[in-house]
Amino acid sequence: MKIFNLPDLGEGLPDAEIHAWHIKEGDTVKVDQLIVSVETAKAVVDVPSPYSGKIKKLYGKAGDVIATGAPLVGFEGEEARKSHDKGTVAGHVEVGEVVIEENPMGIAMQRVTRPDADRKVLPSLRVMAHQLGIDLSQVKGTGVGGIITLQDIKKAKTQPHSLSATADTPKGYEPLRGVRRVMAQAMVQSHREVVPVTIVEDANLHQWKTKQDITGRIVRALCKACLKEPALNAWFDTASMSRQLQKQINIGLALDSVDGLFVPVIRNAGKASAKKIRETVDRFKKQISQRSIPKEDLRDPTIMLSNFGMFAGRYATPIVVPPLVAILGCGKMREAVLVVKGKVAVHKMLPLSLTFDHRAVTGGEATRFLAAFIDDLESAK
Image (tube, rainbow, N blue to C red; front, side, top):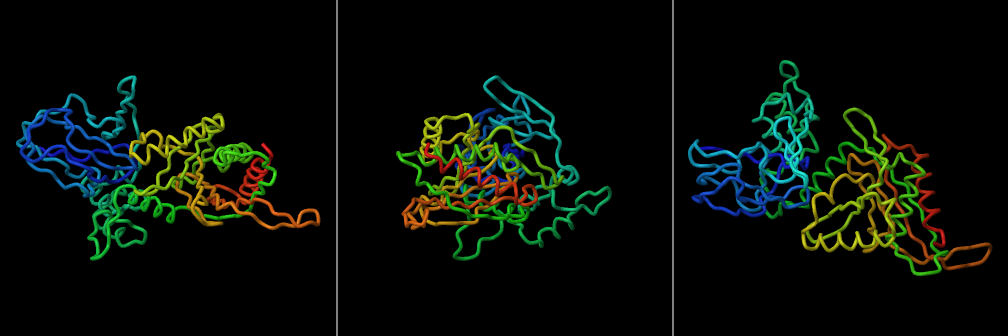
């Protein structure tokens, strides 16, 4: 039997959930025929067949989680004819140490370097680690030349913060699927890597004399703050203890849905008009409700924004998700009684919570960032 293993779908995740099969055992398929849709990194990806032949076995049913590199489809016999190229999944697929990326201009290939831990482990043990939710970059190999052994994998399994996607579900528990599972994995990574500090403050919006698009104003102020303190518009690499300041401001906007949390990205937000920002946010909301948002709109944010106050809550401790170093949370707007120049006044206040990774950002940088944000947001227009 010829086995087709789940390929690396280019999302940086160790596994994927079977969304729907488009074939059944006994069917005969052709190269590039759509065989299954899987959900990974908050998007549904269609996987075509790499072979022509008869389907003998399907490894899993809808809702099952399959590790990257684990068996997905079995083809009858060994004579199944293979596709003409190495990559069969539309989009971004890693094959060995070559990335095959499909784009409107055709197929582009580039060399990539795997992490040391990924190179120093047998494929079978890599699959096992993926199934157990073990981050191989955090495993120290004790074999010859630093090779990761079975005992190393077993030892890592007993360490805290490992998240298994295939462990037996206790009776009465509901397993996390799709977007919620991805979110849980991101939260575990954040808890393991980030050194978070949260500071809070209020923005006084009394100077707003006309109706304002609150999201547009917040995005504009966030961009002004990033220009003031670029340290918060950055990525941090834990392994090398290094940071990369980002020239372009790509704001990840945390949006709630019935399926879980999505984070679409407003790209080059500093160059966008208020009208363009509103149109982009409205498009994101519609696409998320329809589960049709493109994968490209979910990639590479440089800083995060959470407007949780739309529902409830004054202050929070927002979670920084690596490789980002900062997230700003906006709480529920309220009217507050203040003393202004010796007189009692009622002003509209917006509570703010800024969480930053203290490995990459100093307290001075964070407070100057928040002050710059408030200065712009409090202006009349």
